[in-house]
Length: 227
Ligand code: SAH
Image (cartoon, rainbow, N blue to C red; front, side):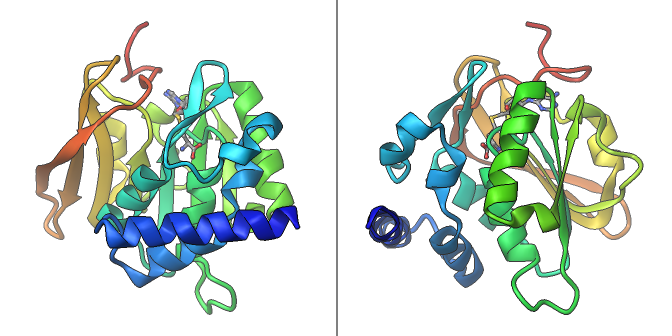
């Protein structure tokens, strides 16, 4: 009964995101319709899982709003087989949505998501959530400073930062494949920032464009905010 209620609410939210023009791609619609966001929020907030809003996950951090997760997935132009780096695992929800797109059931060449989280307790929370929903198969979680990237797994087809950066960390630009896309909020640590999309062209040139205004928690670490 409870699961059915969540399914109905999930379907309704995705329909709203589609009709308001926020999601267009079939694959993002499929993934958002499948990943159970209620499994990635603290127990007492499960009944709010399908409100299109960020929710607290402890340690001063939040799970991003569904529309933001969907928009970032669209801007990244995710494809089956992509190797993706996420900075800021938080609840693990965004990583699960990406895994659903790059490594769908029965894919011959499944992709993989590497996600880095700086708060140890959130690494444990994300891992637990990804285990119970079985996305852990296609997601590797690492505890550490994501602004340094993960040189041992680089280069990546796509990179996303889910916290507000003062500027895009140079190691992440280095670890992006030619032809790759990076999406990140860039701007002040406390509201508001601009979502930027960086493309590394096949001949290695860097092109940056501004997408929209956003509000994220601050990025910490070597290339983050010292707060
Ligand atoms: N993508 C998450 C939401 C993340 S909120 C989700 O789907 O739930 C941003 C997260 O970035 C927080 O958990 C915060 O602890 C983490 N963070 C901030 N600076 C970081 C850094 N330098 N490296 C890794 N994680 C960082």
